[in-house]
Image 1 (cartoon, rainbow, N blue to C red):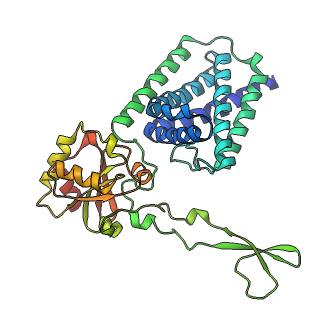
Image 2: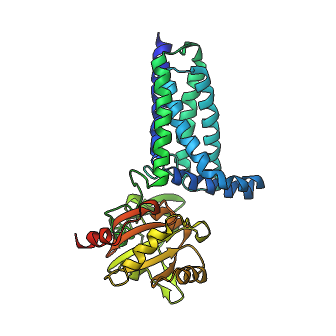
Image 3: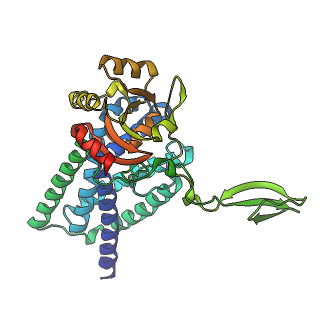
Length: 366
């Protein structure tokens, strides 16, 4: 009886965690794909070159993995094909544990993306989380003889329904934008404010004196102390944005981006710029020519490529360069559109949902 209770608790904990983790990433499959691309880049350099050729498949793999996480979690809790489910979860957690250990030990990918952008974990925190999860899954394996040998038709239908629903939600998020934006550039935030600490940063100082280690809240002024290290006491107060910058051949243009009314057309890669809705974007740009609004093409590309694109479309707008990682964080679309007033994000649009001029102007006058 006790074994069955322990097994049921483990099934709820493991299944619930996989469902939670998967649903967060179903909300943003593009973010998961970006994280996979980071791993493929690292692995292609450090392990085997063939990982580089998986990068074009990153989005497809992301959708498959996030849906699989949720489905396996539901299957474990409902007891659908229990042994297959447990062994599948075992394979997944071994794979995830390898990824997080590799990231932590070699300091290669500093955020595993285990819970998307909703919950940030350090590489070692991610690894310890996976170790605990692996222990629980091994516990289920040890008690697998108590797992359900069959399941009801209703349970099987629930699993299929959950799988279809997660797949549809994932595709919807890809074709639009994440349903819930957990990033530092979400609608309503002021970017310059997010670039500042939320509170004064406080440090502790580890010093050595007479062979003994002491920790002080302020740096000592008297002699006899040897500095060892300095630790931040309130890391939660660090700026949420530390890498935003925009520039062109005239120099840094960050303050320009934060001044007045701006329509930012964002592209993390001009080579992958999707021109499917370029006509709608073109109409928006042309409609803004006489409005008190600066339209800016901000892209991770050489200035010559940006200027050439602007010229080829006969746009009278500003072209700025930016870091690709920053642009990918700002918006999950290439291109994407961000409406900004005095540094505050008013709205974000996937290119599939390009707004018209009246919609944009209404945002500025609200």
